[in-house]
Image (cartoon, rainbow, N blue to C red; front, side, top):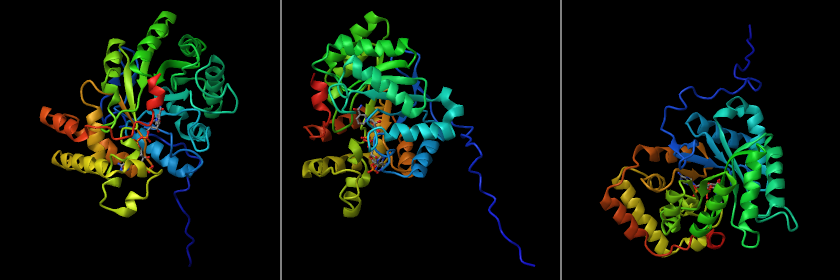
Length: 353
Ligand code: NAP
């Protein structure tokens, strides 16, 4: 008699269950003097979670992240591509997978860069921030985000108006915490004073920060400490430059990046990343792991906001947490390797204001 075989793994309607040991991988870090805690590594959805990637591959990465203790997902109105699609896809994942875990998740969004046509689809007016926050909540199917950011300083709108809009969002229950991104040290101090007066402190700053672009060390970190704010460092791997992808060992890998970093792949920068890689090896780490661990040293970032296009990358990056201690000799070797402008301060103009 012939037996017919059927799959026993069709479970598309069975709810996904997160790993029971998800909080046993690492400790969480307090954001400034607030009640907010973040994982040492957070995941950003800027690039690999739009309509350019399959929903299944996005879901695999997000489930894997959450299973491994990453409970902070960072979004913005314009993440995709196309703009808005990352929030829409994330909303679909929330409905399908993460809804039972909403109270464990820290979900952030932002407004400040170009989102829609006309004068109120960019920068920092009250009109833009309020309507963009509503649109983000709609796309994600949420009542509130955990953190809402002013994505960049607006030189033409009074800072009181931009920060006032953040305060209103908190008072309306649409954001639990608020922060700013890519503001200079001076503007951060001014914004923090305005927020304090309004009674809604800015708890977090999101600056670009990595070994090749340590601009925050020239004033901003000190300001954040004075203001008792935390920080979450974005583009910690210089969009892939601080990984083994561009070490020059493999031309195919070198040309396989998500975007062209050709301008940044100068001989000088290649020498720097090769020297950093050699140091990483003496610590038993990959270059990416060194870059992440370095940002988690004392006095640097509260959380490191990585991007990842696969669970393999995610696992490698999580491996950084095995060794986040640095000797004084290692720190001074890193600063002598990385000295000089690597030309990767892509967000410089927004921090000047
Ligand atoms: P990143 O961590 O510097 O770069 C991530 C990219 O590096 C990945 O997409 C991947 O490139 C590559 N990568 C990651 N791990 C790797 C590994 N182990 N080995 C080899 N390659 C690896 O960060 P980012 O994507 O530039 O930014 C991270 C997050 O920061 C964003 O998602 C967003 O949430 C936030 N952000 C904020 C702002 C702001 O203005 N506030 C601006 C930019 C970013 P492939 O995709 O090519 O594989």
